[in-house]
Length: 187
Image (cartoon, rainbow, N blue to C red; front, side, top):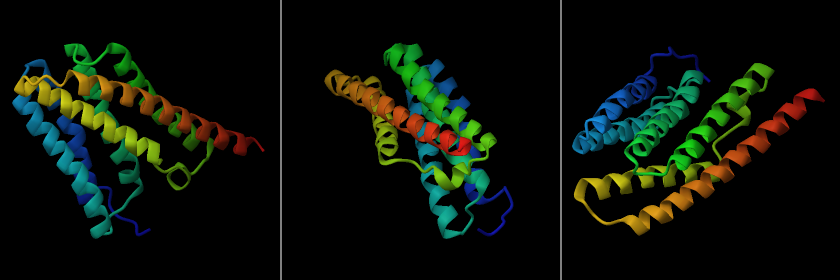
């Protein structure tokens, strides 16, 4: 991997996504769903662009490999907290979603401290990618229902169950993977 400055275009886009999070919170708090849509859309655009540009411009970096998933977690967890505070998703779902992400970030930090090359050994699993897609789809569905006063209650309930199951399974998957890496280091 070529050594690049930390201030690559993809990393700047990722930082912008992180910095958009407080704006989403303010829009939620002020019940400005039009602004939530715009900011959430901009955040999604930066997410798509940073990965694409990292590959095309050959600007992949260790910082970017850590920041990108962290930015996704910050944005999604914050969105779930806002939805939970509005009463639009159950509080227990917010706890599950945020706890899983704290478990993953904490586990990766411990593994890194333990000397495991997490960047090389741990990659997003298919179940994790499905989980993220389901989480985003639930946020969008709820925003659609609240913005346009559509009755999407059945779809929301199905997605709540799907997000719950995928979040728990992917969290357990990463937990088992992490414990295995710790066990390898003891041998």
